[in-house]
Structure formats: structure tokens, C-alpha cells
Image (cartoon, rainbow, N blue to C red):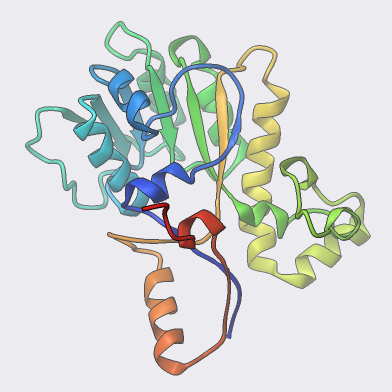
Length: 259
């Protein structure tokens, strides 16, 4: 059974309108509503990742909005935008060549990045490298995850959980060794993945005095075109097998429209 399987469809206008995050700073968020799309025309946007699943979908949307797009990745996956004059590939292994990564961020052709969207940030050293280029980034979006709650202090979660649900600020790191063991025992994978994302968020919050222009965007499980993570297939398999699926879908997605 898939327990607490949260659906976040991507690829449609309604789905894009559902995006929520902890926004700090000003300026349009790449991939937003119609007015924001108009504001994106001609803007310089760097997408870290950009060739698979959500990153690829975002690049497609940015191109439709008339943005100038750079994608930065290791070059391991086929580039679906090869030959597109609006997209420039910057090839770099940000983990093993941090100096080159910092250089690429800090010298964007003499102009600042209007937006940097980071799909592959999984540790504080990675986000530290981004913050080092803060003077060249007008708005940074960290793609985080609701897995941060699975890596959070369980006592805090139990105390805060209620009919209204958890708030963003309820995701806090475990306090003490005993609390740490409890979280790890509950789900070791989520402890690792969600914990790294939570640490990245915390680093950004601690850097807010010098780097306030960031958004931490927590996605739930996502299904949609170009899915390379298996969520779509997992859902389809569960439906075929008649397995129960605990789901939460925003009411406005399923409510009938006025017309």
C-alpha cells in the first residue's frame, strides 16, 4: 500500500498555480502565473539540472515565456534542448569541481542572473557555493521537499500536528541523540534525504542577512511528463493492483468550476 501518497501533478496551468514555498526577497518566481511569465521575457535564468523531469518542464515553460535560459549540469543525461539557440549548456560537476562551479555562477557574462533554480542541491556545501555568488544572483530558488518533515524532530511534529496541519516552521532538526535515533529508525532514507534538504534550508535562513533573495520550495511527491523517479509507475501499479492509496489533493483541484 502507498500510505500518505501526496499527488502534485505538473504540466498544466492549474498545477503550476499550486506551487507554494517559503519566499524571501522580491521579484517574480520563474514558472509562475501569466503576469510573471510576461515579466520573464528576456530574463537571464540559470537552471541547475534542467534535462530531466521537473527541470526539463521548467525550462520548456521558461522558453515559452521568452526567457534566456542556461542549464548547468554534468552532461551525463541527454540534452533535450541541444540546438536551441535560447538555451546554453554549462557543463560542470558541482561536487567534484567546486571552484569551476563557483566561477560559472559568479561570472554570468557580465550580467547578474535574474533567477537561479537549483534542482540538485543536496548538502550545505552545495548551497554554500551558491551563496558565495550572492552578488550575481537576484533570486535563488532551492528545490526542497516535504521530506523535511520526515527528517524533523518527532516530538515537535507530534506536538504541532492537528486538524490545521503542520506549518513550514514546524520542520526542525532533531534535538539530541535520542531524537536523532528515533527519526532515523522511522525511515532511514527520508532521514538522509529530507535531512540534507532541511540542512540546506537552514543554511539559507542563516545566510539571510547577506543573501535574502531566496525561496525554499518544498515539493511533495510529483507525477507528470518525463518522470524519471518512478512515482508515476508506482501509482499506476497500485491502481492496477487495487492497492489503497492515501492521497491528499487540494480541494480547488477537484471542485467543479462555476461554469
